[in-house]
Amino acid sequence: MRVYEVFLKPDGKEEFRHAGSIEAATDELALVLARENYARRAEGTHMWLVNRENICVSEEGFIDSNLDKPHRHNDGERVARWRKLQRNKKNNE
Image 1 (cartoon, rainbow, N blue to C red):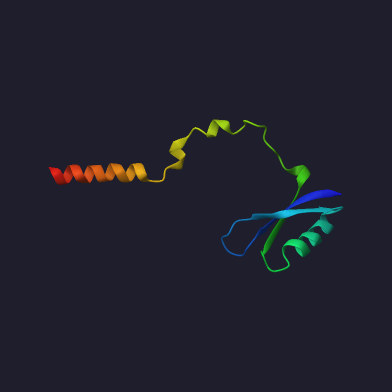
Image 2: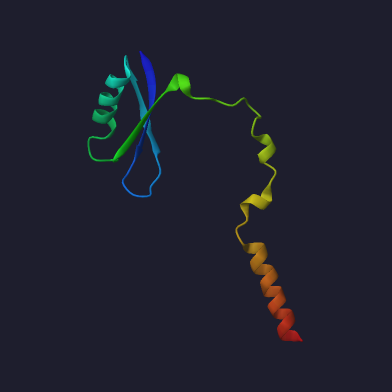
């Protein structure tokens, strides 16, 4: 038996979301079982099945170098504060 991860995507611009896992002896059986277990109520219009053996998992610490990059998570507060400061300076001149 192989374990498959099931991903469903609704119609439109939504992205694929993990729906669950399924065990099956063949790819074809996995498709049928996934459809019957995870798509019975039109939860999606597209389905991916990924054999769990084919999933690549990184080693612990592999992405740690990306943790210290606060510039990638700008919510605009610093820019808004800077613009407000500039407006206040201009108004006070």
